[in-house]
Amino acid sequence: MKLDSTDRAIIEALQTGLPLVPAPYAQVSEALGLDEADLTARLQAMKQSGVIRRIAAAPNHYRLGMTANGMTVWDVDDAALAKLGPRVGALDFVTHCYERPRALPDWPYNLFAMVHGASPGEVEAKQLRIADLLGDALRGSDILYSSRILKKTGLRLARKR
Image (cartoon, rainbow, N blue to C red; front, side, top):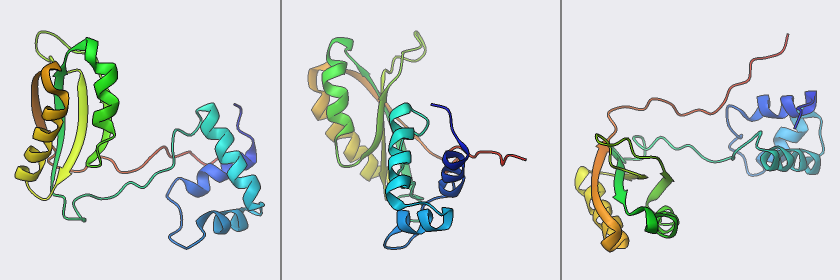
């Protein structure tokens, strides 16, 4: 998909986040001089083409009291991964989950699931729930705890001159 000037203006207007108002798309479309239906249709087209992957909230977990943030990493039998990965990702406490290739011999993990908690104990309890779900396909796991927030923004377009 090739972006026109209106698509680019939409991305620039939304790249710092939606306005926190009852009708954010109406406010954005008004600011851009667009019909709200046109704005949402353009956003949908950009999503379908892959220009935009998603529009989602990016909460600051630390400010929400979730100070123990752990990427749980799992060595799951490859034959079971396609079935079990989506089930892990569907857990209400998993914020993102994805498959990655192993880097043997040092890194045996092929499934990653981010969980947050108010304490390391809470994260570890969630890790045990995931382990139960994985059952016999689980061969090993670990938790990599965050020590700071590195990025909480999406793509930023440079303004055209």
